[in-house]
Structure formats: structure tokens, C-alpha cells
Amino acid sequence: MKKIVMKNSMFLALMLVTIIGCNSDDKTQQLDNRNWQLSWSDEFDGSIGQLPDATKWGFDLGTGSNGWGNQELQNYTNRAENVSMDGNGNLVITAKKESLGGSQYTSARIKTQNLFSQTYGRFEARLKTPYGQGLWPAFWMLGANNETVTWPQCGEIDIMELRGQKPSIINGSLHGPGYSGGNAITSSYALRNDRFDVDYHIFAIEWNADTIDYFVDGFLYQRIERSDLPGEWVYDHPFYMILNVAVGGNYLGNPTTQTPFPQKMIIDYVRVYNEVN
Image (cartoon, rainbow, N blue to C red; front, top):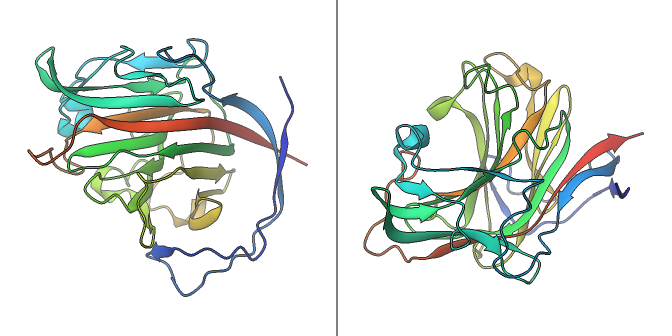
């Protein structure tokens, strides 16, 4: 495995952003130095129309029980029309308005379950979101024990999710026992005079035994500490990653006749690091 060490120094980084739920007048940060060594990555350098690397990604398929628990409307597939390389170093997840298997929309949801998981570290993706009422792109993680321990006891870390009707705002959340669903620990980050579908942005967490930090483009906008939680801390075991674009559901509402389709989430890379001394 290639060894790449990234130093996260980020001293006094000036960011022209608005932070929701934080002091937007404080545009400087001084963060601890951390040395990161690459432990896993996908750069999506495949040929046009190629499916995700089967040694790194699996699929969730179909409509799921009760719309994947959220009253979602899409049918997830493993078709190139819904998830494939664009030949330019990107993976594209495409949500389409089309009838399939009783659903009126198709999309894709890929995951590293049973292929890669890790406890602690830095998890990041550089991507461009879709937009429009009823579009719900997400980059998130589930505890790898979720087949034996029910949600939310397994833990869920939402690195990035966006309501398509609010294309300038993303949310980072934590779900666990006593703080899940509508009671999740969450914070929002907003761009000023910009949108997440216009250009690429880097979404990341840095996670250790006591803290989970949330970043957009290197800016720390949320820190959740073990002592902050109203319930049990369930983040001391391996988690795997998920990328998907959902359509509709109780988080954001359903598409309207004004929602443009198809819509794409374009992912440049996903990288995971371990901290080294």
C-alpha cells in the first residue's frame, strides 16, 4: 500500500464562509498539528461507464423496507446509468426520474461494508452535489456491527448530507442511542453567495476516542465530544462508508414538477487516513 502522510497544520486559516450555529465573526482557527497516513482510497480513475471497483464498493439495492427507513422514493440499482465512472477521474451517482420496480425514480447507494472499515482517523471525500427539491445526497458511515446490533446502537456518522432545495447548506450529524433521527446531534455549514452543486468541496471528519470534528474545505465547523452526548458514545469500533443520492423522504420532502432530472453527485475521490505519531 502506498504511504502518503498528510500534515494538517491549518493555522489561522481565513475562510470566507458563514457558519450556522457558530460565531460567524470568528473566521480564524488554530488547530493542532496532526500527521495522517493514507490507509485506503479510491481515486475513481476507471474508464467511462465502468462500475465502481468491486474490491472496494458494494451496493444497496431496491426500495428498502419502508423507503430505507425514511419514506424515500427511489429504487437503488447497480446499473451504469445510475453509478459509473465518467472517464475523467470521477464517479457519478445519477438520480433519474423513471419507472422501475414500482418506483418512479432510480439512483444508487454504494458502501464499503465487509470490504473496508476503520476505527478512528480522517475520512474525506471531494465531491459536487446535485440540487433540487427532493434530492438528498449524502456521504456517511455506519458501525460495522450493524448486522448484529440494531441502529442506532451501532452508531451513525453523517459526514455530509444536503437538502437539494437548500443547495448552499450542508449538515453534519451524529446518531446514537438517545440521540437519533430528529434528535440527532447536528450542525449546519453554509456557503456565502455560492452553492455546493457549482463546484467541488472537501467534506471530512477527524475522529478519535473522545472527539469527532467536522470539516468543509479544511474549516472546522463542528466538534462533538464524548462528554457532550445525551446518550452512550458508540464510536469505539470500526465503521464503513456509504455514498448515495436519495429521492424524497421525511428528511426533506418529495420532488415537485419543478425538480430537474437527472441529477448527479460527482465524486472526485474518497480517502481515509490513520493518525501517526
